[in-house]
Structures are given as C-alpha cells and as structure tokens.
Image (cartoon, rainbow, N blue to C red):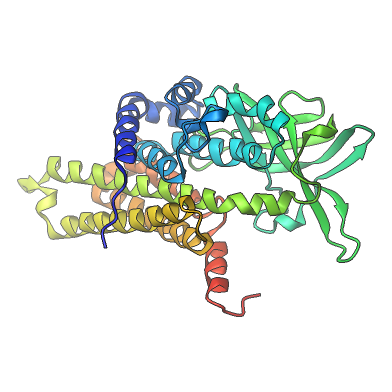
Length: 386
C-alpha cells in the first residue's frame, strides 16, 4: 500500500518551503530572542493564501482541504513553531468556528479578513480552572435586552492580542439544563476593543516566544445578541466537533518539528569534525539520526492518513487522536535527540535545535493533552474508561 500526496499538495509544499526558507528562517532566532510577534510576515502569509487554504472560494478561500493545510503547517514548523502555530490557530480556532457555525451575515462580516489573513481571531475556551475539563467553564453570559453581558476570564489564548486581532470567540455559560443541572455553554463573538474586554499582558513562556498568547478578562462586557455563534447552549459541542481537525493540524506541526531536527542533524553531522572525522561517522550519532528519519516518516504517515479520512468525510476521531499523540510525543523526543547530537552547541540558543527543544513540549499539551488522546483511543477500543 503506497501513500502519496497529490501534485497540488507537493506544489504547495514547494511554495511554502521557499517562503519559510527565505522569510521565516533568517529571522526566527531574533523573534524568539525578542519575544516579538512577526506581524509583517503573518500578513505576507495571508497574501500567499495560507490562511484561506481550507475554505471555499465563495468565501475568498483557496478551495483546499485539511491535507493541504497540514502541508503548509508542516513546512513552516520545520523552521519556526511560533509562525506555524499562528497559522494553525488562526485557521482552526479563529476562522473555522465562524465558517462552520456562523450565520450568513456573520460570515460576511468577519470571515473575509480572517480568510485573507488581514486579521486574526482567537478562541477563548481555556480558563484557570477549566482546560481539559471544559465543562467546568465559569465565564458567564447573561442576555440583557438585546445584548449579551459577559463576565469571566480566559487563559492561554493564542492570537488574542496582536495588532491585527479582530475578535475572540468566547465560551460562556448562558443557562442551566433543567433536567441534568449541567451548564449550557454557548459561544459568543467579542470584537477587539469592546468595552469590558481586557487583554492581559503576554505570558512569559518556556517556548513559542514569537506566538501571541494572553489571558483575557471580561467585566460586564456587552456585545449585541446577534454575536451569538451557533445555537444557544451548543457552544461546547460545536467546539468538540472542530477539535479533531485541530489535532490533525497540530500533528502536522509536530511532523515539521521532527523533519526540522532531522535536517539540522544531517547537516551538523557532516560539518562537525572530532578526532579528524565527521561526527556522523560515529555509530552512536548515525543511529540517532536514523531514528529521527524513522520518526519523521512514521509521524507523517499517521498524520496524513487522518487528514485524508477527514477530507473524505469518513470518521477519523480515533485516527486524529492517534496522530496527535504519536507525532507530538515523537517530536519532543526528536528535539531531545537533536540537542544531544549537537552536544554543547545544542544547548546554546543560537542553534535551531535549542529553540525546537524549548518549543516542542507544549505540543503534548495544546488542543488536548496526551492523556486526553489516550482517553479518546481507549474509549474507541471499548475499554470501560470513566
């Protein structure tokens, strides 16, 4: 059984790789050092059509699919995870909820700029006490006349405070189910600059220094009633329905990380000499790099199989969890291996592998932890998991 990407996918790979090599790689270390968000580069990605890849042409998109988006994310992640997550979150958590659940009027109002990459959007789900347990959401929204009044706080929200952020979609408890007593969670669009909506200072993160991440506070923040996204009380369910796509996309990002480590180690193992010969001639180094090649190949196969199932409209929840689990954990291992291959140089921030090492850990946490993926897979196997 042979798996090959389409000619269109390989053509896109070439375009994005050339862009990443010329416009991202030379500046990634500087952005990381300065903790600066590369607005101009992100806008250039929009002009290249990357933010519109999976959306229909009638909405200004490229008419592509999840597989093509994964290719673009993988190629960006080879050189810089911060830029790759900006695209992944901008599409999957920013524009996709508007496209999937918005009314025609909401799509016309907000989607064009998001699809064109002229603007970014965040998705405010996580809270200080509600992450994997999103049902513990404490942010509340009360319908007061013709406005939703929102109070609460969110944590770790990507793309929420950039100069081009236009909105954040927020999950909030809007009512309580009378039969079960459980909260009904809805999603509400809050435009940037709305009174009562405060973007907190940037986090001091271990990695992803050039990615925009903030806590958000809502204090009597009022938005028009027509900013409700989807049906009232369906916000959490709607979010879960798009999460699987995000897991596949994040797996593609992990594939790029592994490939980036492999590329760097191949180069270094030929250039670096000890005892009068390249270090790649040492079995220990050669075997470590061979393991990186196996990890990249395996992670790529499991990721693009999941993407292909999604694009074909077939069930892929379990495959998405498997891809996300394997690829992200393999990426963390790959960065540790690459750092070891580089030796003392690998511990210096000047080397890409050091940045990959710091950046990669969050791949096992974001958009569903490794533990959550194992839970999803266990349930699919029919195990009596609580």
